[in-house]
Structure formats: C-alpha cells, structure tokens
Image (cartoon, rainbow over all chains, first blue to last red; front, side, top):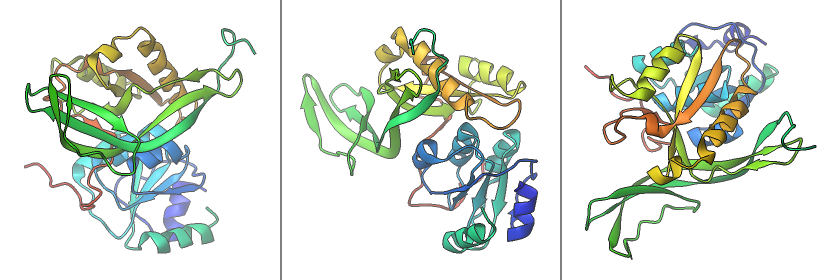
Length: 108
Length: 181
C-alpha cells in the first residue's frame, strides 16, 4: 500500500507532501528510543509526539511516514525538517487506539 | 565464515533501555553523562575521589550492540551515549559543514555522542561508527538516501551546540514546541 492510498483509506490529513513510498507495517510508540530499537524501515510510526526528535529518529530508521494522533499540533520547524528528509507527516483527530484499529482493518 | 572476509549482515542485539543521566560535581563544576540501565534514574548525590556528583537531569534512552548474523562478530557500542543531528547553529563547526555538504547529496549525518572525550578518541571508534552507519544503510529503503554516523568530536563546542539529540524528551508534554519568533 502506498502512502497516498493509506491517506485516502483512513482520511488522514497530510501536513506536508505525500511522498511516493510503500508502507510495510506499523509501529506504535511515543518513545524515540523505542523506535530506534524496534521500528522497521517502511513502517508507519503512530505517535502523539511532535518534537524534532521524531523526525530525526524516523529518518534514521527510514520509516515510511509518521501519523500524529489526537490532532496534536506539529511545529513548522518539525515539518520543514521532515520535508527535507522526504518524510510524510500525517495528522488525525483519532486517538491512537482508534487509529490502530483502522490501520488493522485496512490491512496494514 | 571468516570474519575478515565476511560481508557482514548486522542486527541490533542486547538492546538495553535506560536513562542518560547528567551529573555535575559541585566541587569543581565538571559535568559528565552516563547510561543507567535502571527502571528509574539514580538521583542520589555521591562522592568519587575529589568529586561530589550531583544529579542534574536525565532522559530515557537505549543502548545496544551490533551482531553479524553471518560470522557472529559483535560490535559493542557501550560508549555510545546517543546520536544527534546538526541544527546548524555554529557556522565554523565541522559537523555543520559536513552536514550541509552531505545533505545536498541526500546523505543524513548523525553525530555520535560518547561518554567522555577519551572514549571518542579510541582507535576502534571510527570503525564502530562505520559499522553503525552500515547497519542503518543496509535497512534504508528510500532510494538514494544514506545515513552517515560521524564522531561527536567534530562538534565545535558541545556546551553551546543546539543540535537535536535523539532522546526521549517531553514525555510529560506532548504539545508542539513553541515556535521561535
């Protein structure tokens, strides 16, 4: 599934460009250290965290995209760094539990 | 398989969750950091020789080693305190210069922070960081993208560096950081 398909299926709001990437599974955590140790390249990372560390860790592990739940605001600086790293950041008003259910229903 | 001819396939091993603890000697004002693999960061003040170490703060982090799945070689990264990205705060900083050059080639530079200056000067460290770079690059899926982990001693002045350290901050505050004017 591509990020564009995921966006449409889950009605996600892209906060920057939707890059042409295939996703492969999901990882749910609010801890950067957890992502460094446990996330796989191609995962979509579901989190409520929005600080710059998120982009630095996501880029290092090469996750396909970050989904920020509960509509948490993301700073322009974080998005600018994400765009330089060609990392799509999605937002959803859903809480993490609800979003993960929808990801599972969508076959992720 | 012989280690010297092995085309290594690295995996992350011995993952240890814990805390980066920063402490300061109130006798001489020296600061230092270490990794504590404990459920809660140790905050007790203690004496060590001439030093009186006082807890300054901590953040959740992770330590790990790399192991080759083919030949079994293990690269121990116990000296690694964390990784950071450059915020381009100091024009004459070497990490900034290299990061700028590399970024235009889609190479993402991460500075490796270690526990003490003596440790980053060890002969093994460049090879360890090259292996760490290889570990991340072997997993990169984004076409044309590369990861380069460089020693933290390239940072001109760590005390004024505003780089982004990959550690768990804001665990009690999940709102966006205030934007600078």
